[in-house]
Length: 206
Image (cartoon, rainbow, N blue to C red; front, side):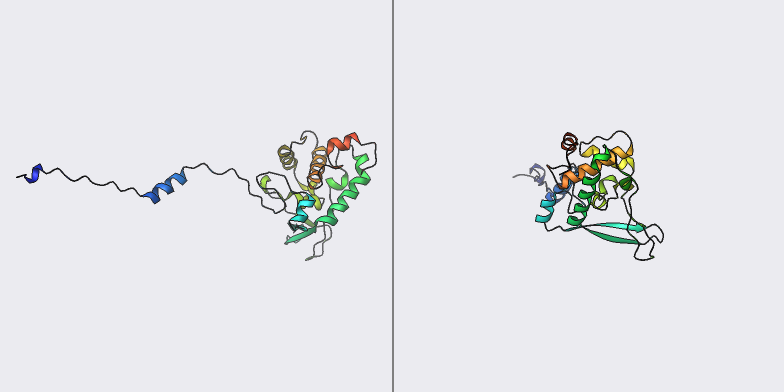
């Protein structure tokens, strides 16, 4: 007869909390590098790159919106810009002036005209709100409003760095590169390509 002391103890089963294990494994995962666009006209996973006019139309995007603030009364509002009409106006401006620009932004881009404030009536006062974080800048809104000149040189260099554009020299040169690259993104393969434009500088702008 076996005594109580001679009976081998029962092995305790090890219980694994699978839910906690899963939670811990998620905590150890590296954060995702996916760049989610803040605006529907910006491409996902691409910093400072945007859809073309044809792609915007296919997606049903006819307007771009951005926040503006009055320099006088500080009122903030959202301004909507029609993509087609604003881009046509910009294209016409470039066509008239590109020969004289010589890779430098003109005065109209360096010191842009602003919309009037609908609240206090102050003329030339609705200034676009440019995000402090460079990754959050609403580039297409600034382009279509022709207010990219309100960006700092460092902000413009950030854009050019992510789009492989020349980013040294005076601000008017970097500003010119930013305008032309954004126009080329919206209308690719055309006269806004800077290499193409330089080769055809003696010819009329298409």
